Length: 345
Image (cartoon, rainbow, N blue to C red):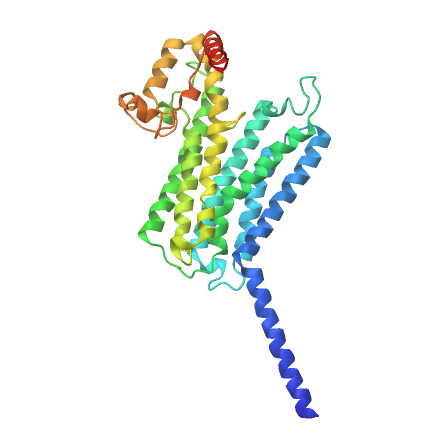
């Protein structure tokens, strides 16, 4: 009887140990870290939407975006240490990526909060909140919050990948160091560009358009810095892959820079589509010759000297200075519309 009881205890102990190991693997798996990160993001943005629409305000839209980034960094740092070869505090790769990520998103949070306070609102939301006397659009406002949820989660993927990785590489390779430095450069360019533009606005917008500092070598250096840093973090995260290029979860991290480019280069009412095209009218009305010369000599994104010597076909391709960003006077746009109607008929 005692032998049977002892045997049963051993079987139960082994069963419990196996259950604990399985639970540990589930809890420490990268999929688990990503899944909870997605749940955190949806919860923050849905609550933000509900409260903001009830109050008919966009005041804390950008603030909750920044808070969401910081929450994901904290969560992944804690959860990624469960059953990992090294604790987060002992893994310099995870420490570095978390600090770089927090510095980048912390700056964005502070800057956007300050800008919203200075502007006393955000005109992007006027229509969907019915501020111009129109009908409020709850679904349109909801789309803004869900777009932010996607952006926050997708941008965070390289950081989530590193923090949830089980790879034991405590040291840094030359590849790691290079892309960490480049990431810092991207963040620094964005910070400098934001500060220089803010000071230029504070001083009365001298010269009608900003062409000081980094704005003299790029028409949108802040957007370049934002895009560039996520390409660098995606590259940095490669060393945390357990099977190199064959790791599909690492490849999913490329959505971080690609989605950033999608938002900043193709979607209205933000990014280049909001800053270029028809919205250049104010410059062509006030200072057409000076602004035309500035556009000709200054890259749209990549900071560089000698842009005016770059062939047009290169500007239209690898330098992203697409024709859709050109300003078309109303008469010219109408003429093109007539031509298109003629072709269709």
